[in-house]
Length: 89
Image (tube, rainbow, N blue to C red; front, side):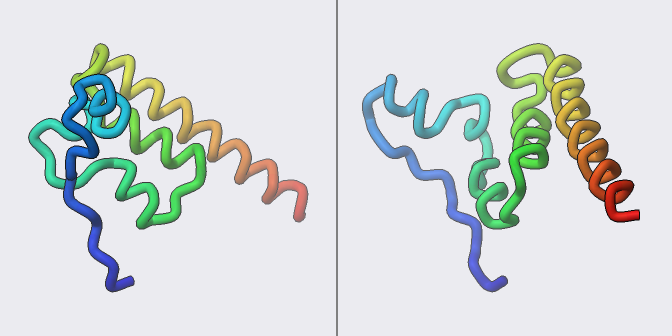
């Protein structure tokens, strides 16, 4: 894929809108938003959520809590894949 990830661009000067469009815990100090990675890689819900929690770990809430949430989504995805695999066997 030759498409480049978009750089973070504020969508609005309105602080309330920027909290929705470009939340600081995802964009501050970065050039690429996690949502851009999610879209470019075409991640499913579970992997997108894991990426989200990894990317904001320690920026919004407790780092350990965010990482545990990421693990929860990864484990749930693994269980679904294993279930599908077992159904095919």
